[in-house]
Image 1 (cartoon, one colour):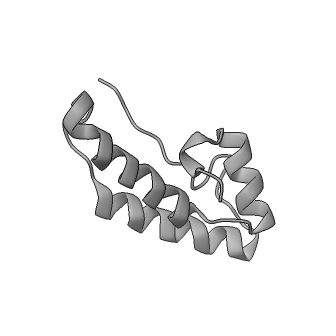
Image 2 (cartoon, helix red, strand yellow):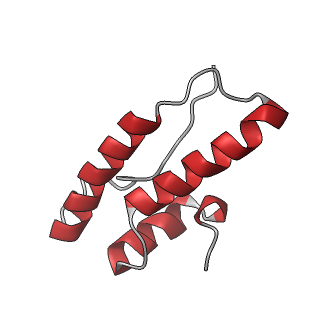
Length: 81
């Protein structure tokens, strides 16, 4: 299976469009990786996993209807301050 955390945004969107995987699966993969590496790299001040999954579910519904709300709908991101 493909490591969703290694895909580009373009590859993720292509996978959503084809139904190969979903925004929820991609978001879970990113959250799992973030939690796994956090003790070593201390990169995150705050992870909002539940909110991220909520938004991913909404994006997944839009993709299933063929109505994404933008070109990157459902692509997980992190923000560095």
